[in-house]
Length: 114
Image (cartoon, rainbow, N blue to C red; front, side, top):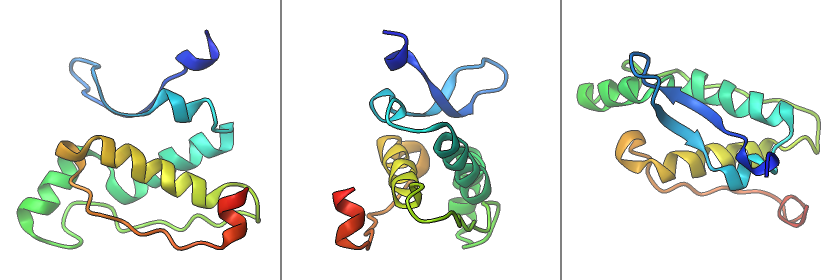
């Protein structure tokens, strides 16, 4: 199925072009084009690359080599919470590379039901 074979890559190994970080294909089929762009934006602004994450951890610096953060400010209903959860899920699936810690997402019951 062409729809389920879509791949969204957040990071590749430049010399070999091997995929390092990608979003699960089960999630990709649920994402709208603007949401894919938003997940990529958050990755690039907050984490940049797995090597930047490792450098930040090695330096034990909160703002070492990693990104400084991002604000995702869309209108209601465009999927800000979902986009954030997609990025967190992707990072947790690549724990050895991303070193993500447990995360708690607080949102209204209406967000969960949609």
